[in-house]
Image 1: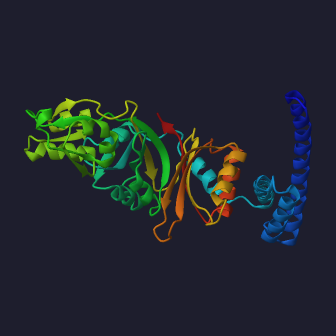
Image 2: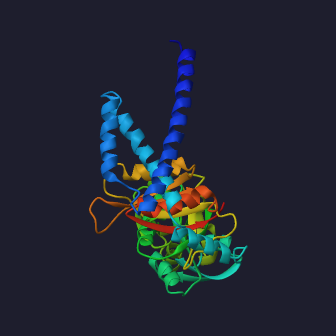
Length: 380
C-alpha cells in the first residue's frame, strides 16, 4: 500500500469514527435525560473502570495505552456534555453575568490605588498606564496591597505577576491563595533597568549593588561583569534608589528606572543593563468585587486537581476540546499538603463566548478546589 492509498483508507475510517462518535454522544444525551428523571448522579466510576478494562483488553497489547488515553478523554467529553444538558445555570456563570451587567462601559480614569514600594516604583508606572490620575497609596510589601483591597482602604491594587526574563513573581502567587480579590485589568510594561549612583561615583568604585530580587536576576550578566560586587535585595527598585541617595556612600549603586535618577538626584552610570532588550513585566490590577469591562478576553483561575494520575491532563484537555487557549500555567506548592500543588491558569477567550461559559460551569465539578480570579483585558 502506498501513501495515497493509506490516506484514502484513513479518510474512510475517520468518516466512520466521526459518525460513531456523534451517535455515541446522542446516546449519552438520552442517558443524561434518564438519569435526571430518576435523580441519579451522572458519574458512575465503577462502570467507567469496567469499561476501560474491557476496551483496553479488546485493543490488545500494542494499542492498550493509546486506547486507555482515548477512552478516558471520551468519557470526560461525554460527562461534560451530559452535565451541560442536566444542570441549572452554575452560580459562577450567574455571578459573571451580574458583574458584566453592573460594570461601567469604560474603565475609570481616577481611583485610589494601592501599590507596593515608594515613589518611582515600576508599579507606579504601571498604575499610571492604567489610570489617568491615580491617587496612589504605597505599601511596604505585596501583602499590604492585598489587605488594602480586602479592607476597602483602596478601590484597586496594582501588583507585578511575571517578567519575561526572570519569570513569575512567586510571592504574589503565594499571596493569591490566601486573599480574596478579582483581577479587573492587566498591563504589560517595558522595564529598563539603569545603574544609578551618587554624583562622583564611578563604575570602578562600586562594592555593592542593591535592588529588588527580580531586577538583580534580570541583570545577572551585567552584574557578573562588575566582578566581586555584593548584591543586596530590597523590597522594591525605587526603595533601593532612595536608599542609595540617602546613604552618603560612594561605593554603592541601585538598579532602578531612569525616572528614579531624577527623582532621587542620582547619576546614571549605565543605561538598560538588563540581559534582554525586550524585558517586560506584567502587572495585574485587582479589586474587591468582580468588574468585567467590554472586551474582556482573558480569564484567570486557580485550581487544585484530585491527587491522582491524569487529573491535570483531564483539565487541560477540556481547554483544548473547547478551543480555549492556555497562555499561562503556574504551579505553587500547597503549604499544608506535601507534594501537592495549586495551579494558576490564564485562559484566552472572550468571557461571553459559549465555550468559556461552558467551561466555567464545569470547573467546580472537575476540581477539588476552584477559584475564579476574574475576566479582563490587557493593555500592551
